[in-house]
Amino acid sequence: MINKMREMAPTIMMIILVTFVGGTVFLNWGMNQGSGNGMIRLAGKINGKDIPGAAFDRAVNMERQKMQEENRDIPPQQSRMIPKQVWEREVNRILIHDAMTKMGLGASADEVFEYIKRNPLPGIDTVSVFQTNGAFDTSKYVAFLNDPDNYNHHPWLREFEAYTQMSLIPGQKLDILLNAGAVASKCEIEQQYRLDHQKAVFEYATVNSDMLTVDSSKITDDMVKKYYEAHKDSFVSGDQADLYYVKIPKKITEYDENIYKQEMADLKSRIESSENKIEAFIEEAKTESDDPGSAENGGDLGWFAKGTMVPQFDSVAFSLDTGKISDPVRSNFGYHIILVEGKEKRDGELKVKARHILRKVVPTIETIDQLSEQIDSLRSVMVEKGFVEAAKMSKDVEFDSTGLFEKGQMIPKIGYLSGAGRFAFSREKESISERLENNDALYLLAVKRTVKKGVQALDIVKPQIVKTLTDSLKKDMAKEYVDNLLKKVGNDGSLAALKDSEKNVNSGVTDTVTANDYIPGIGYRTKVAAAVIALPVGKVSSPVEYNNTYYIVKPLWKNTIDSIPWGSEEIKQAEMNLKQQQQQIMYRDWYMSYKNRAKIVSNIDEIYLD
Image 1 (tube, one colour):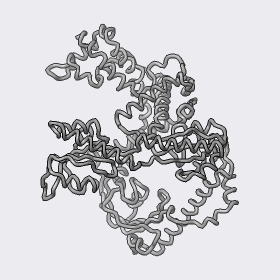
Image 2: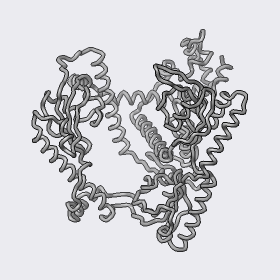
Image 3: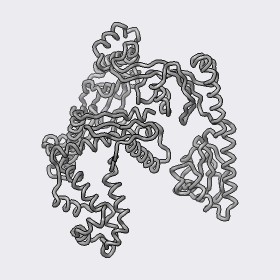
Image 4: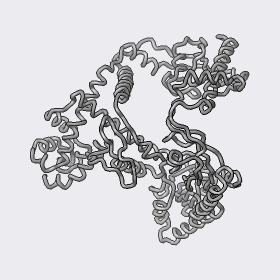
């Protein structure tokens, strides 16, 4: 057994690391050493604990690699958020550990043994030494745990034991303490049951304030100034920058189209020259196709009816004979070559079974090189004549400014652009960036203006204040509009018919719904649905405001719940749902309160500015 367990030790150790320590940024931080590329020495401090920048960067790279393995194409914006997500996870881990330590939440040796005995590591049941007749044998596992020598021979077992003692059992105890007050009263359970089971059909009429217009002259400079003086605290910001930019989109050229079309034609020829065309097609699809949904399955799209695929693909697939491979087919997804494996009528409808290989069409290296030369030439002119003057003279570029944004924020009108944030907050005004690029375009930047952290000046926040005041006037207009509708309709009129006579009104009749259902045009678990359940049939509600929209509703039918089936599975489910909701709220409130009292210093925006 000992030899077999030694052979299994690397696998079991990996299970421990992935399952229990996967959420921990650092298993062994070591010394506070910065990276050799000038990275900030520390990623930050959490309650006095240093978070080394180099170790944190390794954790970020591991997370990015993990995401890439799960999803071929990670949007730049999502990749950009990974450092903050890793940081928040580490903050959570350290604060929870600190809280458990301060509360004295430990675990005795007996508790640890009982936990490990009752909760084997995931995957341990598949280890042959713990099986009898192919099934996990608990007695063999317990005998293994009872042998002291095994703790010396198997380091992974000590790791599991230590993690259980320091984190798992204390975490369970903390969970019990935090959730001790989560109790659903009889009244709350009854209300939850009614929301889940009471059904209704109702008319509704809505007025969305965002759809109304306000005369701009109603927002005076005096109103803006008074609002600014009364709400100065809400206009505090960090350092901000506003950038000029020129943009040259990475457009696909005729040359690019021809290159990809020829590549796909060559691929078809290679497949058709093989002894087994279908097998060759499948293997090529696995390595050459850009369609993540079908590539792993050799391009298999299964059976589909006419009209299922995009028109260009559809027409070719249904015109090909079985066993034939198409010439390159262009769709908005790129170039396809299609293999039809079968055709048959099912329920009176012709269906095709096909495979495809997709090649997405993007600018070629040659095209990117040409665009790079173009923007580099423009930069040379800008150095001589100035950014703005040269940009205005250029014909094939987009010239604009981003507007103000804070350090670490997504850049308006540009989005993710590696190097832009660092340039914006580290260069002098009037300097010109080197050529920068993302998936969409090539850019040159210049700093238009910067604003130091603190209360922003009135001229900077004026557009924001004008919008706030405008939105407030729109809501007042919407409320007045709905009040007038109520007077017109009364209790006997039809709300659903209002959309035919009132231009700013959306109205209709719902299907049979409960208060907890998603209601098209209204939403999920809204105040509107709760108002319907509370109203008598035929009674028109007073205005209900929800998400900048005013609603009036009128129940047309409701089922009657005369009694509550106490002790039933439905009641038990309602009680469990309520407790879970309370537990989530209690934990969130406790954690945010604890976090707000903690001393947290983050350098993440400085390190991962772009």
